[in-house]
Image (tube, rainbow, N blue to C red; front, side, top):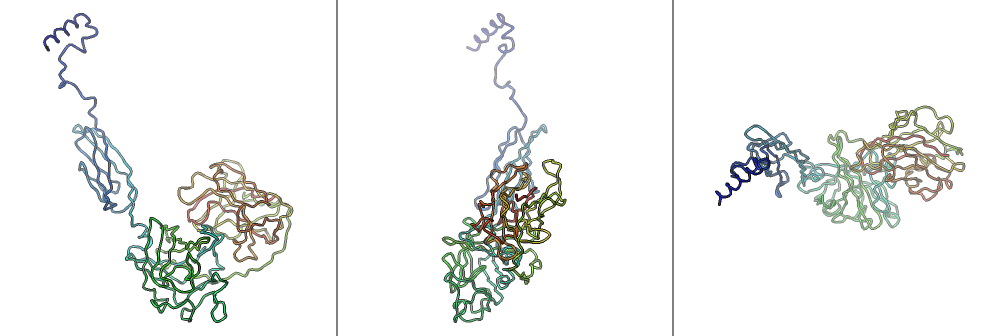
Length: 506
């Protein structure tokens, strides 16, 4: 059969040589066929061990290669075909495989690998062996809201309440990796006002700081005669469900008398907190926990310093409040942020506050007029605050109808975390109210419709505030003496840079 086929092909070649001369005249033995390509192709997959998050097995699927070189992205390498590598710590790594043939031709393939240490959050909470936390002595220490509100307007912050409650600031809370917990109160205890109108012992309201040796102060604790000794306590931290449970009679963080079911007038066996923020910082780590009830939330803001000597002193200065400023009824108020004097209307000037402002920077959009660079710092809660200048006055808004602000939200900020593009313009009584954030007026935009990298003018009718603790509009107030701007959101430490111009009340 093969002989006949060859003769037939020769005959056809004679008839149509221009067509068949190449394709049919000769033996079609497969051994003579040349492969499509001999260049290496680098390819691999990896699998993380179920028993050890840091152990990774690599399977090599490269083609046309005989020599392999692995770069594991952590400074280590291997020439095995299918290596297993153990990383020293969790993190993100770029793994590169170089596959080469005998002729020295090579190809590379890089894959990104992310390893998460399941105990990293526990290590952040309790350190390598133990870690001690304090309520913040600067900024916000604790707060309460009608629900678990992650905003500072319901929080006790600043110097005034902290200086009035020093006995909560000398408390320390130590977590050990073995699951034990210490609450050291230095012999003092703060008793907060309870739900039923006040904690009364022997006919007296006992809200405030007390020596722990006072009898009948907070029930009897059989497990710990002296609250200052730390206590025989344990804790359970669930970093998946973000819960922290303290076990042992009287164990607490922040305020001794708070639970999700209301105030407890005697020590209880366990308390559960919701962990809403646990972050590693350059100088200090931050821990935000909450006790959540049916319609309220208590928030506690703690810090742990890498160097214990960096722990700030407990505030002692209590500013005097209750100053009723003289009234003014302006026909307009304006601040351009250009760095030059705004003489047309009553001047608004910045006062000391958490956010920063640099006047007179170049317009990021290329305009000729200079603008203000708004800096959201690493403070948990903050805003850029203004009062009238040169004299601080209570503002009567009778001649005004509208507030406007131009904002520029850069795309160069990192919005992948807690930083937002939201903008708030607020009004408050700063001089006569110690906790001005409990009775403020706000005009708020969540930022979802504000475009990035261009100027946007936000305009609000003064008689229609849409946020804040106060339901009143400014025309019903004669005590408002502070104007503030907040950009980037609250209850986080993510920093950001924004731009503002032409704050105006018309």
